[in-house]
Image 1 (cartoon, rainbow, N blue to C red):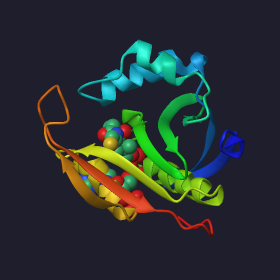
Image 2 (image 1 turned 45 degrees about the horizontal axis):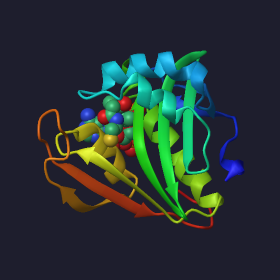
Image 3 (image 1 turned 135 degrees about the vertical axis):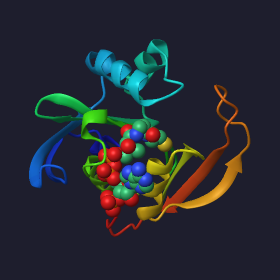
Length: 173
Ligand SMILES: CC(C)(COP(=O)(O)OP(=O)(O)OC[C@H]1O[C@@H](n2cnc3c(N)ncnc32)[C@H](O)[C@@H]1OP(=O)(O)O)[C@@H](O)C(=O)NCCC(=O)NCCS
């Protein structure tokens, strides 16, 4: 587990600028809560509360939560819960100014490879049926729809699609 909680630095290709840029990742902690809360409120119709974001910032064995910075600005976050060798992506967003440039795909690929290298066997998640960008991203990364949770989202009664994929233990995405 601990191997997952590491800092990383990598280059992603920014499709808008047409150049590689540095992205730096680190474990999510209390110092990141205000920045994540601000993005959460812009990115989601039913954002997580401050209290929930604080709870997730406490390191626990069943959580793998990451934040990523580009040019020292908070650019993205990914929160996972872990049950035995299965991972569940609870929360994932890229800052609006950086969306559609390749960062979300890069971070998901990085996370899938890191999880596989550390022996995890599957990743599941819920996505709003109407969220075309996220569904496109997950489908392009080999996630299948495994079932529908009817009326899952309490703000508008929308269904969630549960998507999942297995992870290659050899470490490939
Ligand atoms: C969903 C999200 C994380 C994707 O991150 P991103 O940086 O914008 O995504 P990328 O630019 O890396 O695109 C990745 C893939 O998504 C797909 N995609 C992106 N925008 C799309 C759109 N509008 N319609 C369909 N597919 C789209 C493409 O298949 C793309 O694949 P490629 O990398 O092979 O070209 C980001 O848009 C976001 O934060 N949205 C708001 C919050 C949210 O919905 N989070 C997910 C909750 S389940």
